[in-house]
Image 1 (tube, rainbow, N blue to C red):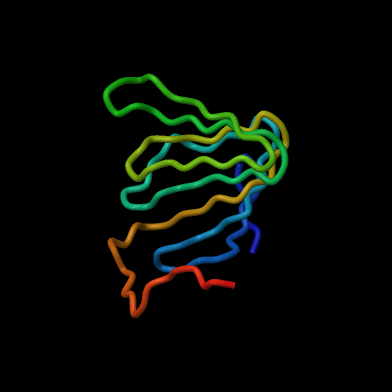
Image 2 (tube, rainbow, N blue to C red):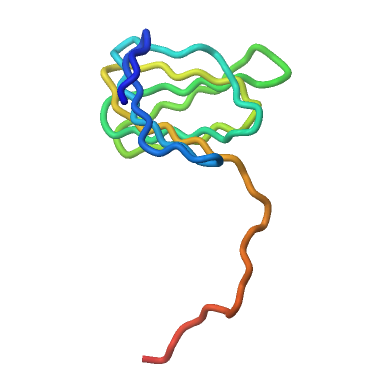
Length: 115
């Protein structure tokens, strides 16, 4: 289902309790609100176009900006104030997940077989 936004559109592709993927299309000059997520990490992977990801430092009004082009990806940690901004028409994938502490239970160990 495509959802209209002031900056473009978003389409949820996968929505699970601890993991989501959205395809977002952002019009040139479009930007989202400054916001943060309490528990979710947030990654942006650019398919085409150019996207700026602004992340504000907790103790000041200064920000770090990451410029993403096709094939680039960046991650924003939970509770980090951030915003995206499209330099040109952009298609990207926004990925959200919550961390689950160690959840692997090993029944054997990996290795290399002599071939």
